[in-house]
Image (cartoon, rainbow, N blue to C red; front, side, top):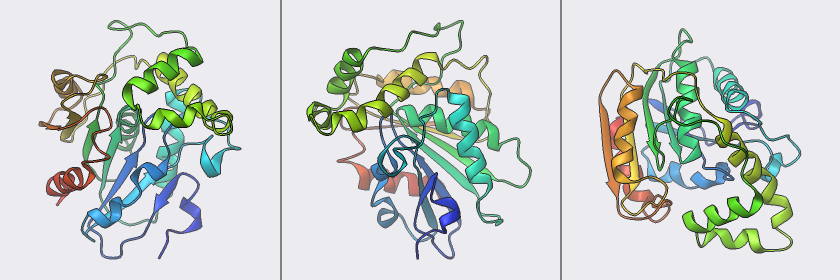
Length: 250
């Protein structure tokens, strides 16, 4: 049974009757909910898997992209709060840009009575930097964006070279990279839940030692897990990653 229409604009997935926890997945910059296609089949029925569909891509192409992290996190938090009024706990998983979005959504959910948040799982990105550590930057040019995409995802970058596809997918990538360039929380909010940081051992965007930086955003335990692979290690290693996440949630 598919999820109700009331939650398909921002959240995609398949309902799991009898689930004990709801795992919400946040895609990378330029990514979409389809990045997590098949994850529900890799996790047991006790875990209901939802993925976030950012605006400005795929079937939300007509929706304006978010211009700030605050705008994006507020909208996703609102969508999650309009979920069925059950007591199903939430866990959040974000990859790359999705790590920062998931952190901001976790921050907001912790302040909502009646919503139980159990864990934040981040991947392929150091913790957010405050302005004193790193000043906001100008939005990168298209050339700079494509150079970075080619570095992080050489195979996936081919789509941006296609003359018919590029005009459709470049706006969301441009918006996401612009959002990240200006995103600097005024302070680091320490979550009262455990945080797990994952990454590839050959990730050019997030060195293994950078994963430990997430200890600064939790008052609880930080677990670090390194997988074989580059920035998008999770694609060839999704079964291994899903098993690791399952072990931490159940």
